[in-house]
Length: 404
Image 1 (cartoon, rainbow, N blue to C red):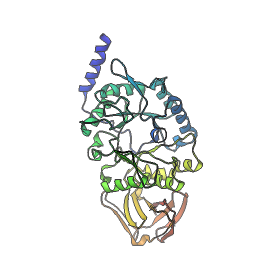
Image 2 (cartoon, rainbow, N blue to C red; image 1 turned 30 degrees about the horizontal axis):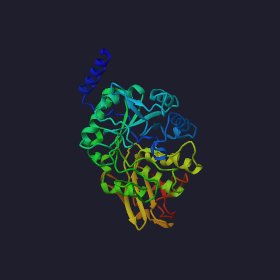
Image 3 (cartoon, helix red, strand yellow; image 1 turned 90 degrees about the vertical axis):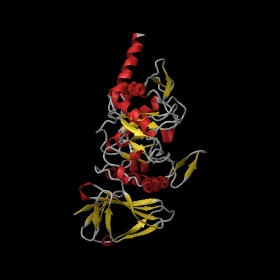
Image 4 (tube, helix red, strand yellow; image 1 turned 90 degrees about the horizontal axis):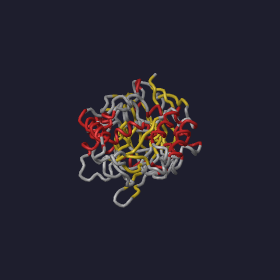
């Protein structure tokens, strides 16, 4: 009885001890890692997670910047007699602390999943009413990252529910990245900067180029659908170092064409979006591996300004996107949304690119930039001469522009 009262007192103490919210300084660039959901959904267990950690090292993903191994829904068991959540006894018999220790030993960090509601999206115990207990549990296990979903939340305030968990994590004392996943329903970009480190902007991603995949009363979305939502929401201003718009996890390597995967990765880089691989990294094709480990594209994504790119021009199926980078550089992406190769001619001298949101501009008539093709890893001349070429169907041409 004394032990029960001590635990209750500790929880109550944490609950009233602080109004502080997220841990600052954990992320300056978008997080990079791997998440189990897109490929495996509930087909997960501790052996597979260990294998993913091993593969993260063996494939060079860790060295390329990927560091989080995130276990999504379906890891939960039941709560014990005191209300503390347990790992699923068959899927994770060794427990989460042992698994976290293994992941950490590989030079990686570990993430976990919960939900603001009574149950998770797959029907396992959610954190509603148990936020401080769950935060204490995650801290004791050595968790580094929490993805927090929005299923079964009838009657809850998004701001209130996510703030409660943010404060619980802070009170528990272990620095944990907090990933809000309300699918943009509560417009988190307008309030979540002080609460979490990243927030979902749309419904779930689907491994298709430009589709809506219906699940009955909700839909998941293809790459271009999510890109268009991001642009239409006009949310660029809310992103910066340590707080990121999140268009969901990557589908690279999950069944789209190489062209589509390359464009998908390029788009996420231009958005400074989190790069959370969602494929089976133990069994990647050379093409998938090359896309996910392209250091020059990753550098665009990880640029310290963390500015989300914007659409500069659109003509038919061809779009031109620009993204300000540090040191006066820019990234440019020519995106072919269509099913046929498209000719490209871009006369730099005729363009002045202005980013009014972040007060940056590139006047190609007065400033010359060197071009670097980040997919071929080759220099491509400079902006004194018009760029001519072809953009393959459902693909991109992408360059970094460096002032002389």
